[in-house]
Image (cartoon, rainbow, N blue to C red; front, side):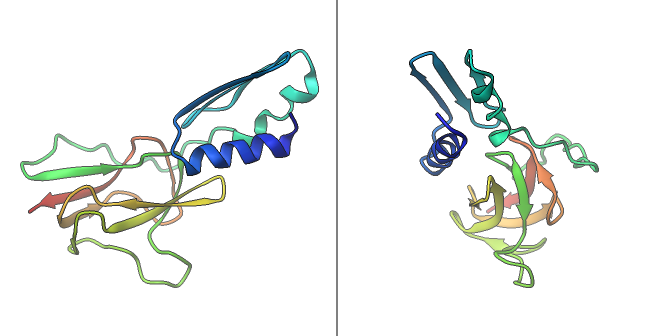
Length: 152
């Protein structure tokens, strides 16, 4: 299995929202867990060298402020994946949402880029954006709070 095949496999797993995958082909064993580094075990060093395809993202320099206990009626939208937070669909485009905006259930709030794939993050609630907890272009971790929404 070469680096290109591994990359295509990882992109397929992200596209199909598969959280964990394991494969065995001869002496090569491959295990992929989303949000974590790729773990490979094989006797040939050339295969092990392909591991950087899905290396973990370094933590953000300025970590998001800790989120206090949620207020009544306020919910937290968290990142479902590790990646880079973008507030708009492209540079110069208006932000999907900002503080004070009313949002509908399923409305796109932001994009989290992971391995060159743009993942639209949709609102799990209808309500009002109380606070955007991350900055545009900031790396985010799995489960990191992105938005506070006052549920209507």
